[in-house]
Image 1 (spheres, rainbow, N blue to C red):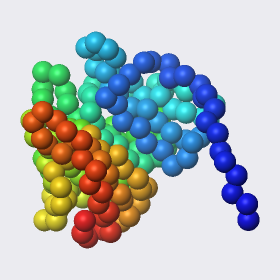
Image 2 (image 1 turned 90 degrees about the horizontal axis):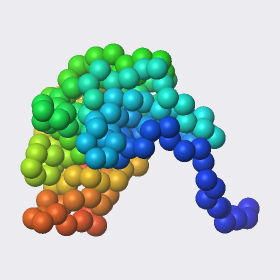
Image 3 (image 1 turned 60 degrees about the vertical axis):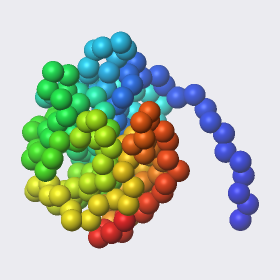
Image 4 (image 1 turned 120 degrees about the horizontal axis):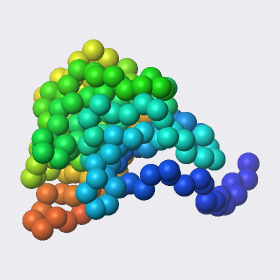
Length: 197
């Protein structure tokens, strides 16, 4: 077989400019953009759905506006959890999205912002991130009913990292803020197999 070079093409623009938000989805045509901030200070609860060509603002909004939250799942079955709520600090709040509306879901075991998540709405992990002001190594596991803190932590403290993996037993964590003061990036990469990093 022949592998040819791909190209980037411009897609439809988001309806609301945002940063410090989270995104999830299984494919290019079933993605979500969730919450975040609109510079300079407006915190959002808006959700947008991508069709592969255009973004549509969902009528469903998060109960609590927040930034630096984590998410997993698909356009029709997603979880948004943790984050930072202005005036309320780091959050344990979690919400489930069914493709139309957000509803309250069991809370994280401990407050977290600016970490990452992997898996689906039915089985997921939350890892790293900040109980402000320093990055941590904690791993929390969602079994579809509740969150629990795993006795197994990441090998490296970090926040604001990249991640790959749509299955809770096969997740990759890479880069991020290693917790230095002032903040410095890390090259560390770790993989989660469902029981260890």
